[in-house]
Image (cartoon, rainbow, N blue to C red):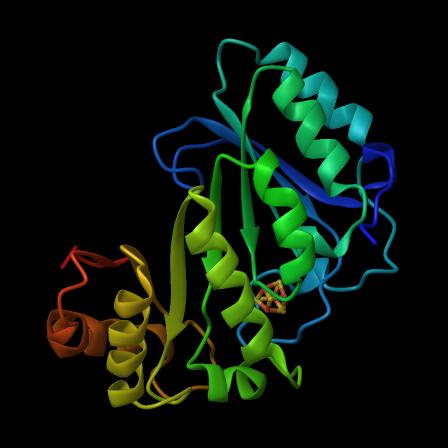
Length: 237
Ligand code: SF4
């Protein structure tokens, strides 16, 4: 059964009034949803992970900003944390669309059923494919996460909703050969837009500079036929 709650129930950890990079081709606001069930070692938003943490602002604050920015903003991105962890997301998406804004979602893909319910309300999705399926649990700390992301990707590819997949990589997370094999598999599944991001985890040797160098010097160029593959934070390939 689909979970639903009013948008007012959303716990919101933060709000960015304007971004030019989180929703391709659109000027957008970003709503950061509180709570995520995964524990990736390189998480860049650890303050958003605790689902029990009360929100820093309310849905009414988001609506007030959007009403002020009509004609100035094109869309709203729901990011996190994990937006699909909250039952108020579908109502929030519907309200945003009713105000005339396009909608986008950043998700780790851990809730395929909820993604399926939200897709008709979305104009763009950024799905993290954090690792090859068999390696996913080691990155997310969540058993079974590989199967869940794979199911989410299949739903997204079949939906017709515009999207990209993102992989954050460092040779200390999994080998370069597996990254290339993942690229080949994603291409065969039908993905066109794949973004590779150097991983900035201070516990990994060399961290982001080492990962960026490896991506730019050989890995990305070797990706077989993924015309839409780019290294974010470095030159396009
Ligand atoms: S899925 Fe995203 S928000 Fe959740 S722990 Fe991983 S990086 Fe952080």
